[in-house]
Length: 194
Image (cartoon, rainbow, N blue to C red; front, top):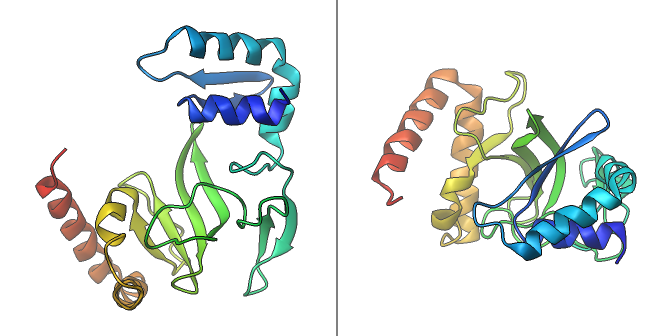
């Protein structure tokens, strides 16, 4: 098994990695069984190679090395030429669509807070936030969608998604409207079953 395959297998089993200097931090799923513990042992045996692989941009879909290129707007992004799915990250349903490409990510304390996606459906860059408190730089006017909205957004038509996107871009231009959308998001989140 290659290091890329080892990392992919571990991620599929629910392990989450972060790198701190020359150490790998590995968060295990709550129900870690012997199979997962064996994976962790294998990761430890190949520690240096795993650290190097995690530091390099690799495709989360197939584990191949990423190729630097530019998106349709000429902005830099990474492409997986082995499996041809943009940067190969997991593609959320609906808003991102098949072939969506991650352009940038915000990582805090080893956790991905948000990713900037080149959405093929919206033909625009959007933030997909995994943290409800995510606030991009004030000069960044990309629309923000939250991960817990994906189940609802995945039921929308492309036209509806484009309308929602247009609303959110406009809202980013107006801080007062953005706070109203954020408040609505918080209220909606409380109504969703947990």
